Length: 116
Image (tube, rainbow, N blue to C red; front, top):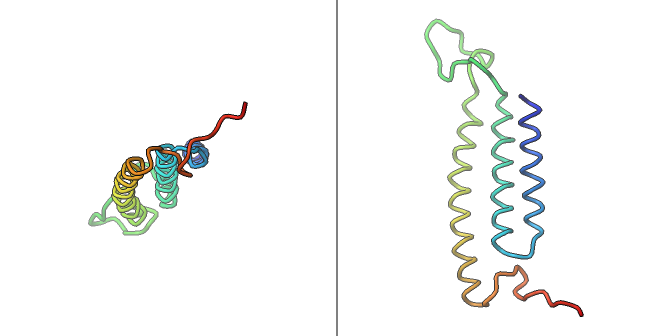
């Protein structure tokens, strides 16, 4: 299970970096979104992958991290998802305003000129 999670984080990070290097603003925003997903998975995996463990404390069972899931990474990821959604919405609004003002959606503000 750990290797699948590590591969997923690697693929998301690689795809995000590739999209960040593209010339169009929408591709850059999608790259940032993929990288934020990879970071969320990484933070979530820091809480250790546990199967068949109790999510909350139960009477009669000793409350150690060996018996329960760690709630801190889950809370951090939930907060990061909300902040990432707001950041993506803001970037999309700024992208639309920039496209309306400049007439192009390239990151540097001008179309690539073909060399003949």
